[in-house]
Figure 1 (cartoon, rainbow, N blue to C red):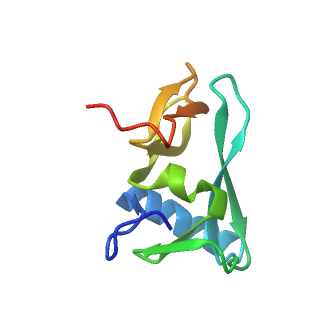
Figure 2: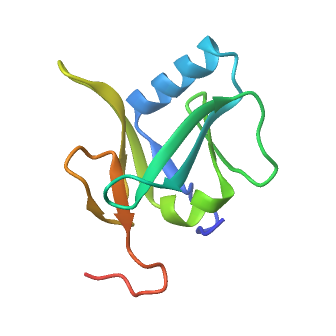
Length: 122
C-alpha cells in the first residue's frame, strides 16, 4: 500500500461505517471492496461491491465493525480519502472526499486524478 505506517489509508465517517456494517450483515459479506475503473466523462469511476472474502492483495481497513477492502489497482488513488454516507431527500449514497481528485463531472459519479508522477499543487 502507498501509505504511512500506522495510518489508515482511508477513513470512514460514523455514517459510512454504519452503512458498510449494514451491507455486510444484509449480504453475509466479509466487507465492501472499493476500486476504480476507467469510465465516465471525467475519466475514472469508483467501484464498490460487497464481497464474501478478501483478496490477499487487498488493503483491509477495519473501523467500528465495518471492513473495507481496497483493490490493489486503487490503492494509490484512494490514499487519504474519507468515505462518508449521506442521505438526502433526493438521493443517498457513499461520498468520497479524496485529496487525489483534481476534477469531477457535474453529477459527481466520474472523477479525474492528478498525475501520480506530478508534484502536488498547493
